[in-house]
Figure 1 (cartoon, rainbow, N blue to C red):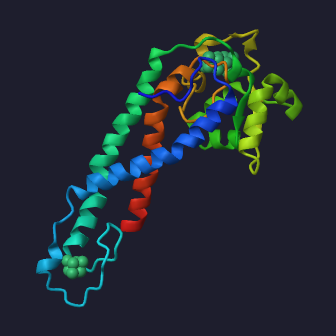
Figure 2 (cartoon, rainbow, N blue to C red; figure 1 turned 120 degrees about the vertical axis):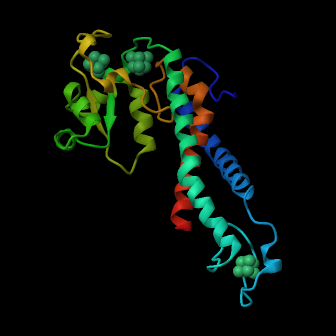
Figure 3 (cartoon, protein in one colour; figure 1 turned 60 degrees about the vertical axis):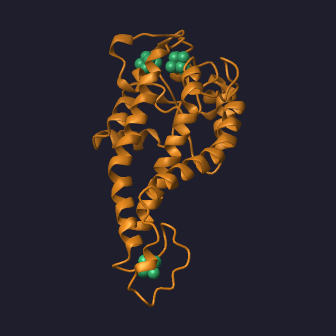
Amino acid sequence: MSNFFSSSETPLNTQYDNLKDNYEKIFVEAAESIRRDLDTFKPQNPCDKCAIKECKIEKKDIFAPYPPGCKYRDWQLQALTYLAGDYRQKLKAVYKSIMDKKSEYSCCQCASCCKLATSPYSYEQLKQKALRGDKFSKDFVSVFVPYKTEEDAKAANPEYFELLNKLVEDEKIYYYYCPKLNGNLCSDYENRPDVCKDFPHNPLKLLPSKCSFNAWKNEVAHDAMLLKAKVDIIDFYGSKLK
Ligand code: SF4
Ligand code: SF4
Ligand code: SF4
């Protein structure tokens, strides 16, 4: 497995640039892999024996507007069933193995994730989501509180703060911290919610540069990006073929 990051403590800008540079290549890799899979059950030369005389379709790709009764139309329907069924199950198994790999790494207690957490939602919005039953929001507001000012948030982790602002310049970001942090230790460790236990939740999100789970992210980044690309592509196929 190739590694995108070369050091154990990964500068945030490097993480971002590597992910961005690699995603385009990986997207092409994912698209080609899906196309090869679908080509395995593409019908061979059905036009030779076709009785539909007025057909003017030249390029026989998966998205062409094949008429009812066309063998390629059957192929489209078969592809749709395969991608929504067996293929999606395979992707779920890949996701599980990526997340399971995280257990091979452990937290170095840098406390970065307790000192600065971000959300696209305000505290009030998160509380509303929690009231509506959203588990992640419920956990989040049970420990995190908003920073009073952006300057306070920036002081907690200037590098992380600045990069997040650069990346999501058109969207509002809300900054939070946990008052249960005592030094670099959790004062309520036994009762911490899943949002803490499960951090980091996604190997494709930026992590604080001191986070020891960068090593996990490094190991699974290629597979995680390939998985994301495949999910995006099969969603696209689903919308075009239905
Ligand atoms: S309807 Fe389908 S099988 Fe018939 S000629 Fe057109 S593309 Fe070929
Ligand atoms: S509850 Fe503990 S582990 Fe969770 S954010 Fe607060 S200090 Fe960190
Ligand atoms: S940022 Fe990573 S290493 Fe640091 S406390 Fe959080 S999970 Fe542990």
